[in-house]
Length: 354
Image (cartoon, rainbow, N blue to C red; front, top):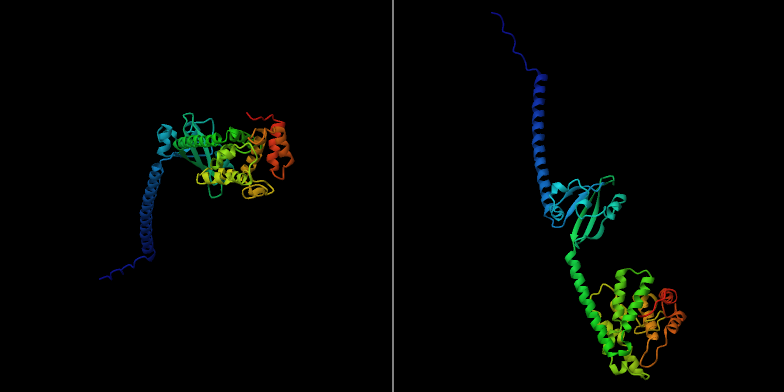
């Protein structure tokens, strides 16, 4: 009987290949499962981000370098009166807020990185929005998108206007109270305010600052409500004690308004309007820049109007002599730039008190 053939040993190479294939399949399956898990996580994160984006009540949109909307939240679509899918791809100023072109901040975003650009816009409907814009850049600093968050401040603005009107009416009532007790200076504060604003405008102050200047000047003598009317209206010379009492009116006026949260240095204007550059004024003998600019303007306007008008203890001296006083003491008692602006108004621009 012939011998049986010897049993073949497993091919090591084939076994290794089969093992490698199994390992590759297992690794691929693991990677696929991991990828599916990652995709699920990414999808959850995307949905959470989208839900959060749409939950924000302020309108938000992103635009590209061509100002076309690439993403917007529900609040933006609602403000535009359109579906989100219908705003994508359109230039934002054709959608909301409608305008003739892009906001100036957009161009600035593209030119250089800015932390934030804030712009205010009033729509034809009367609505007022503030746009806060941010540039989005890639890792190399190249501009990609801009994101704008729009805040509707219409009601805030209306409330502020109502508050401003109430404050203005209150200021007028206070000024009238002072003038009724001192008829010789009737209209003095309003005339001083008129000159203050003209000087401030000549100096290049912005409209907000001019508004504060007008308000402070309109009530700068409010402290006189505490001075007896017989002293204010006395035609003869005042005693030392009476004059010292009159000199308290800046401090008294400051005490009256110090707790009112004005957005301008109204209290300082009232307190400092009799201070002089060289320290010879009252009540504190302040010098130079220790006196706020508004008070330096008020000091000049107050002197010019007072000297131009009648007083119980003297007739009107007249504007020419008042201007001569300012010119003679410019840089000593009165701020040089303020004095020069005042002189220019009267001598070159034809300013006159109404």
